Image 1: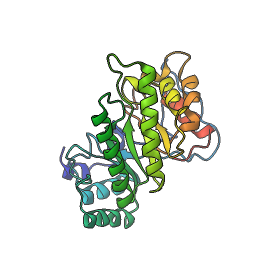
Image 2: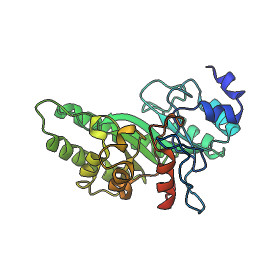
Image 3: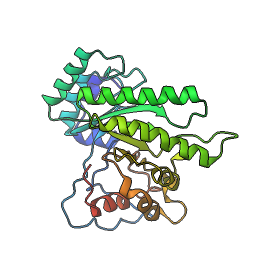
Length: 273
């Protein structure tokens, strides 16, 4: 879909069609997995806000178009995906001048840049690939800082043959401690997304138990597997003290995932993000 067509969409159409948003809205009419209406959210002012991430939608929008479309749709937060030639052009190769220009564009608009979503993963068994991922993650920290963002998404990601799960967990934690210490100097949050086979919430808790840098946080990914074992709330409780300021939601009409419960739990803990 072209940027021109997107610009002409109504806010209702925009929100209804968006399958990959950054934050779920507290007021959305979610249903539980049994098809009945979910319990009412706690009666308090919600700080959870709805935003947007450039993935399928938004990949063809340059920064002026992106900002204009989000402003028209009244979606006031955005996360920029990188490393895939998106039209917004916010990549590691961006010059200092262009970084300042991008920062000013957001500062002059009502849209908050939440940060960048890198594709860097911390599971590589090959030392040279792991080092390259760590250094690229640090470069994304600088990029996010330079354009006015507040954090960088990274992946845990895969298990590998002939490498124990324990070894992978400890390796990821060490890498996150290195990146997290670096990020703290730039006032950035490292957002470890619940992505890939290593991204199950109990495993992320095991990783975070070994992370000492407070700048490292967990980014929920709203997957059905989060409901396994003792259920979503139990898995959520394992990681809630480590949650960062962003999370991903997907198809809000998917009844297999308890969106309303997730939002209720975030509101209950007074989560601001």
